[in-house]
Amino acid sequence: FNRARFDLPFFPSCVPTRMISLLSRAASDDGDETDPGCKKRFCCGMWTAKELIGFVLGILFAVCLPFFELSPEFPQASIMLAIAFFISTFWVCEVLPLAVTSLFPIVFIPIAGIASAKSVATSYWSWIHMLFVGAFLVDIAIEHVDLPKRLALLILSKVGVRQPGLVLASFLFTAWILSMFCSNTATSLMLVPFASGLLDTAMGEARNLQAIDGSEDSSSDGESDDARDHVSRRVRHLEHFSIGIFLAIAFGATSGGVATLIGTPPNGILAGQEILKNTLTFDKWSAFALPVSSMLLCLE
Image (tube, rainbow, N blue to C red; front, side, top):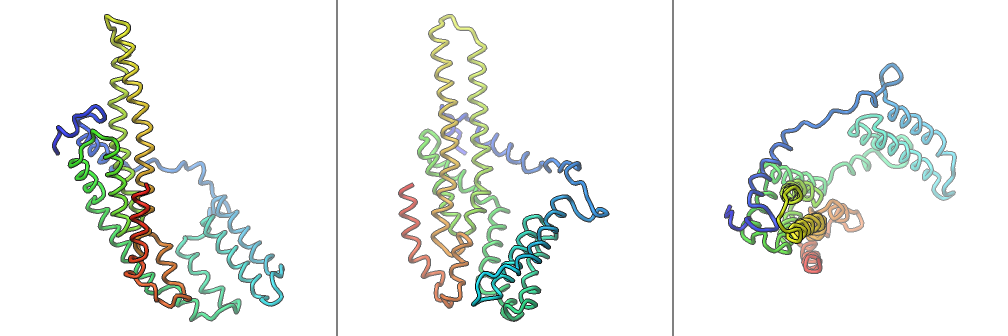
């Protein structure tokens, strides 16, 4: 990197190197383990308190809700409601592994006579699910090569950090571009640690300067007060700028995710609806949504 571009009042000159070191240390940490005290088990060690509560609530929902008639025209609606609450309770409380709970509909819905096993099974796999699988594989590859970090550093090395607006626009544009080709949630998760490390390093340098200026005695009280005020303003500006960076990542990822079917899962779910009969293709969606996404980027 051209360090002259980073040797500026807004960021310290050692930001890129220290930021990468910080991210490497953070990635190598395993994290704290959960306190064993909150994992006390009941029923011969089968369940935790949360799982036991979820199991009891799920059974109560499954037994009681079918007796509430929602509609005389559709008597099976109350049974479907009971199944939905039962499965949701097991999901929320993680009574069983999520993958196991997700297979409950293919068992209970045919048994209740709501739909055939064939129709339920076909809902578990379609072209839209394959599209999501491909998008998730792209997400994994992008994360493996640290593409968001590399792209953001490339842009910052070109525009520098003298102008805070350009730094903010760099993160906004990076999030917007990447979220078109991978999930906007994954884009945010990959960019936020990078931005956080950069900002934490800059904030640490600014606070160090604030501490040094506060400990040094000056021959002129007026000059000392002016220096402290300057450093304090610098810290406040960095705090406000940090909020702006994170908002830029969020808004950029949101607007970029609108542009393609794989940018955000709801787009693909809409395209896979039976009422559309697979008429909403990738190119048709992009032709409609890309101008909207570009307009949102300009407004941001």
